[in-house]
Amino acid sequence: MSGRRIGAFLAVLLGVLAVAGAANGAKPSQGAKHRVPGPHVLAKSWALVDGRTGEVLTSHAGNERRLIASTTKLMTAYVAMKDLPLKKIVHAQPFEYEYGDSVMGLRPGQRISVHDLLRGLIMLSAGDAAHTLAIESAGTVKKFVGQMNRYAAALGLTNTHYENPIGLNSPRNYSSALDLATLTEELLRIPAFAKIADAREATLRSMRPVEHIHSINELLEMAPWVTGVKTGHTWKAGYVMVGSGEKKGIKLIAVDIDAPTDETRFSDAFELLRWGFGQYHRGTAIKKGEEFASPTIKYSGGELPLVAGHSLTVRLRKGQKAEVTVDAPAKVTGPIPGGARLGTATVTVNGLRAGTVPLVAGRRIPAASGFDKARGFAGEHTVTLAIAACAILIAVLLLGAVLRRIRRGKRVQSK
Image (cartoon, rainbow, N blue to C red; front, side, top):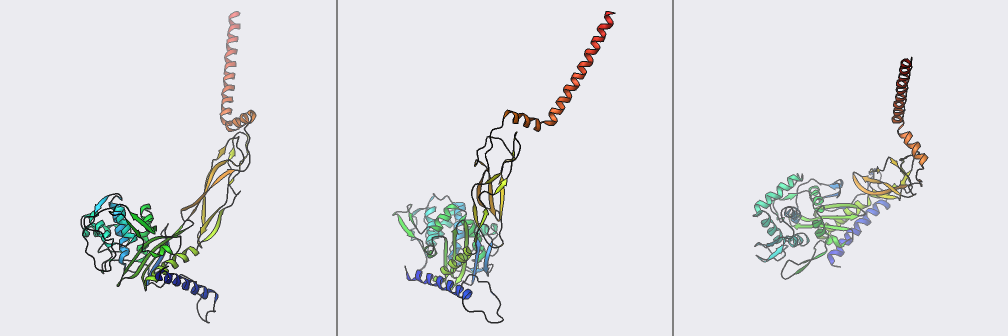
């Protein structure tokens, strides 16, 4: 492990020990206010959001406009993926860069796919990839930047403005921690982007010769549940990190801007994600055998209990509640074996589906007998049968009256 990675892990460990010491160590002095332990973050601006709903779990100066360095390339990727097919082969554009800039080393006119350019853009933070994508997408960098700002407005990023597709220092190229989280939430909904952001390495097969690259995002190496996303750094912006993680269906996005060192931008993001996942607890939303519906039994009468086929646990934060929606028939007909699946119970948390459980027959229902069917038919069609009986009775009475008139007429004629 490199010295940089060791430093990142040590920073995380020290942060965890500091929180543990505050919770279990010395007692606070008299007059001190009780403080709920939160994430220990050194960056000047940061935010942690639920990547499924956009709900803010915690933040500090989250709406503050700040320089964001190469995390600008997240919007570059967003616009390029909206405008260009991934398989399209393009020609690399001439790009002037200074010593120390992140690049793929593209040669002017070199053939490369949009997909491989996006890999270089996100995994290597390559400025030459951003430049080529911008011109290929809009014709000029200026027009592409206009598209970036239009997309920012459409996404509701009110504290964001772009001046270039790379992240070069400019007072007009800024965003906020919460805006970066919102943009990342949208990007991670695109499967191709999510796969690129989560990749530790990739082979660029559209290039000649074929190249193999490794991501510079060291956050990916700090835990198996980390899923991305993008680094950034300039001397004016400081160290910037947009990270994401997923555990048991919970997706979180962490952003820290202007961290003091390279190591702390990774440890800050890791601490935010680790703290965020710690806010969720397991709760049983559905218990096996719990009854959720009781449809009536056609013909034979009574009700059939429909019970949960198995238990379902969900992860909730304090204050969250699980809701259950049942889809089951109102009426059933035998024969039905015990345990037969006849419906579902779906659990949602904050409007998001957390899982579905089958509803099964709580007992066996035999086939209805002929007598049951007749009785059931009579019970279900009482009004119809009563009307029919009345009609028949009236018809009989009318027929009797007609027959009596006919008989009286014959007696008169015989006299």
